[in-house]
Amino acid sequence: MKRSKMAPKRIGFIGFDGVGTMEMTTAAAAFNCAEIQEGERGPKQCYEIVIIGLSNKPFVATSGIVFKPHKSFKNAPPLDTLVIPGGRRLTLLKTQIGKPIAAFVKARAGCTRRIVSVCSGIYGLAMTGLLAGRKVATHWRYAQDVARRFPEVQVDDNAIFLKDGPFYTSAGATAGIDLALFLIEEDYGARVALAVARELIVYFKRPGGQEQYSEPLQFQTQSISRLSELATWTLGHLHEDLSVETLAAKACLCPRHFSRRFKVEFGTTPADFVERLRLDESRRRLSNGDNSVENVGISVGFRSAGAFRRAFERRLGVNPTEYRRRFATSSSPSAGVDRRRDSNGFLKSCLIGLFSKSLDGERASGCAQRP
Image 1 (cartoon, helix red, strand yellow):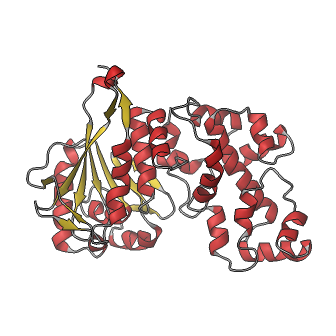
Image 2 (cartoon, one colour):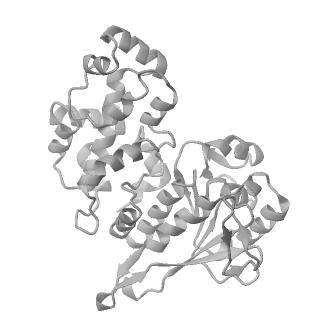
Image 3 (cartoon, helix red, strand yellow):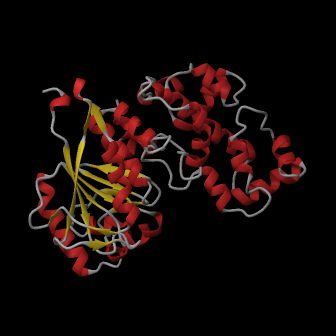
């Protein structure tokens, strides 16, 4: 059967009083944007979204927005994917909220292809007992509490999202978009997922194993000194000379004092920090697939293709050519990225979690299975 003849996949979102507004809506927005072309008939929705309430009554999110469920736990239809959004009442383990959610999820687990939690939705999923021995992600704020309350679960406090069998778990609310894009790519391929990312003005599909705190964000969070704005400036000048002397001049410090202060405040050298940023940007350019490996290395500031290859393999455990083979996506107009807007998107994305220290995190998240 051709993909265009397939019925939309039905995704159920569990709703309840006190659900997080973004947790309820960000992933849903991504699924709603996913379309495939059906010949002369035009675009066709890839997913059918169903809001499932504990009852048929409307429920109120934390922001005050009122949602009206399509179905309740009693009459919910068969689902391809079931999503448990986070919410304060779940984190407090309110029995009138958590128990019915856990019971519904557990009852549906055997006939549902994927079960997903967003942010603190992990509480409702963990209460089912289905996650015993599995590795999960959640917002760093809740990681220790989840590990304490559910010791049988392996909590990763840093991953954006993780896949373990039929269970998909994500960190904060915006990470729900990253996970949704990953699920869309699983179902319909990279081209559809990238089209959704463009529609939402999300310029990057972040691998699940990437850190919740990026290198630049950690840099800015840890400091309120004159060094705190250096990360953003550096991102915009990766192709230039970023020697200690250049960075020290930007920070209005002498090179020796700058190096010493940088190491004390951030636990790494300026050279190490710059190399990580350059490799992060190089990964993005390699994934786009429209530049040679040599040109990518030179464009992000490495002096030669050889130096780029050696640094890339040392940091990521794979050479640039092999990385491109695994992760490159189509450079066709429908899947490409607008270069004029992309630089600003990169800056914003970096500040919310772009940098991954190793490829191991990507393998752990299932991203190494991408076509």
